[in-house]
Length: 346
Ligand code: PBG
Image (cartoon, rainbow, N blue to C red):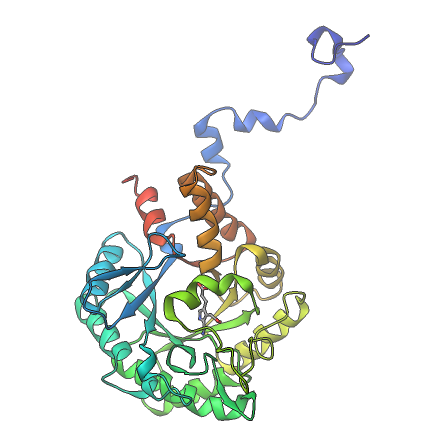
């Protein structure tokens, strides 16, 4: 009987000609042939802001993430900037009492969101502030668009969206990020921004946003889930994409490029790395952004907290996966921790 691991059992002809392991022998060799590298420049940190007095309110399903007061937000943003993170994506948690069917609080120039944007830009002018354009944080229906006769009305929503974008640009937003999936909104927003003197404000389109179950913790953070009551669609499937589709992702991107988007996003991230690769291979010109969403964060944090995964290498491996798939930038709740690890501080 041949013992497979006995070296004497190998004759010359079965000695491997090719030995990929040679280039894995030492840490220096592995570093030299490394194909993709995660850098702090790739990271965008999503942050939540609230009108509460408390500096930070924990979000149960996102351990380590908070709803910040405006002061707390400014402190956190300044620290992220010092760590070298180039941008934050800001989301407002609006109290129920200020929500209505037309999301009118979104148009209040003295509302929480514009105040937060102004405060961060005053403290850290060099930190890019990306703002979210969609009605859901302000809507009593919990939808990204206006609900009319039981449906989310595309064209009525466009007008509201352009006004939100202008309010945010006036407050100092560097990048406007429509996350609503209405048809034609990139062109409508571009036209409105240009008309108000904001032609240098960029548009990051959530071009490919799937109707995903991985947004749960985010909707908890903002209390923004579609309201379960008569006359209101109970999910977002008439505007967010079917998770089964990939050709349609290309169509959405082509339309948004044509309408004037500067950057394109795929969301969620880890379950959709194939979509990022598919788009990267077909759209060579525009930066691609991946959103490593709240549910993806919750899964890794839960496993780490249970001692089932080693958090630091697991998170860095997941983030590297986005780069390998072809993403240029990653919106991730792990941004701060990753920046600290990359700087060798933790
Ligand atoms: C809504 C919006 C959502 C997220 C960002 N913007 C949720 C949704 O579409 O219901 C989710 C982000 C995350 O889960 O981290 N405009």
